[in-house]
Length: 154
Length: 387
Image (cartoon, rainbow over all chains, first blue to last red; front, side, top):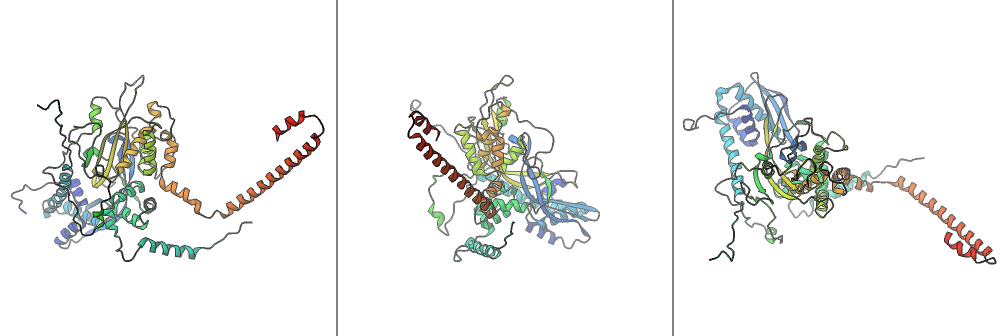
């Protein structure tokens, strides 16, 4: 990492969890393997798939209503007295377990600098995908033009 | 005496085997994968998620495969699967203003800030069958990538109107938990939260027809598609074990803000009113129909007379769910042997009575005719009217 060039990234725990929730299973699995064995990791709440009721607002700003449910997975682990939580969209047991483990690790062993080494990489990939989708959408923006009418043509 | 009859187990088992073979179709043709359905039949997936009321692209794709492409059956499968999953959380209300927009159009303002973004749509296609799609190995057209992304701050059209006070502001409603049809039975009078949930999971065909009926004069309010959006929104939950909210992922939703006329009354000057549609995935037709029906159902609160089907909450909400509707219509296929025997007996009995009555009348008439032969014609002119 060229951490001298880029100032070290700083993330709140909520930001870190949001990035981990959007990571792919392969990304987290590889990152976990690269750390070597992590001992003393205790599973508090085994990964469990379930539902979250998604809510909307009438007109986008008004009365809250239940739109429908989505699948989600949660897991809680513990490492050296620190609990790691994961709440991720979809039915992704292993991903939730890994995300919870990283959450615990970042709190229990800040000296490992996972915030600086792992998260920016994951976030960059997620941002790139978002930006590409946005640029494709922007290519469909309408440019209106006015035709010159007969009485104006001179 | 009622005698229970059993049987049909073998026939049912064999029927399952037969439907499995039918579903697979010609073995010379490769089998569809769930991933192929998820990626290439994504609008079917979106409808099944919306009306099945579970956002999960893999589950919906599997349901479509299992149902052999019958979307109402797939929706039923998804609803049934729901019963196996615990409710872990509810989300904070989605903020569609912060949507990562893929499509955003307005039929009421040409030059709205951020512009008209068509996104992926079949609206401007010629609806001619494209036989190229039937060919293998053809290169498919790729999206054009603009230099920049979509303007991240796209104001809502309704908010633009709101600044001028030209549109009714949305009411926040009571701070209580919103009505939940998955836990509470339908009840009336239905508040807007209950109605919107029922409409969101309601059958697209039914709502489309009702929305269309309002346009044709059965409760119309001269609507404009104020704004239609498609894109991804973040889902936040507040977990029990943490003291901060967590963003668990992004889901694709469609949103429609319909702007409608309102004459005004003694307290309120004339202003536009709203109808709202929101659905999972790319479900634009659904959200437009939903917005029309939402507005029609608001007739009483806006002082309009309720005269048409789309304005009647009980009619709309009791018949919008296609799992319920399909179940009740299709239960007619189940054995009703005993019911039918009873009906059969009843009809036979009624026919006997009818025939007996006819006989009596004929006898009475012929007797009357016999006795009327001789006397005056006065009684004859009265008699036929009473037969």
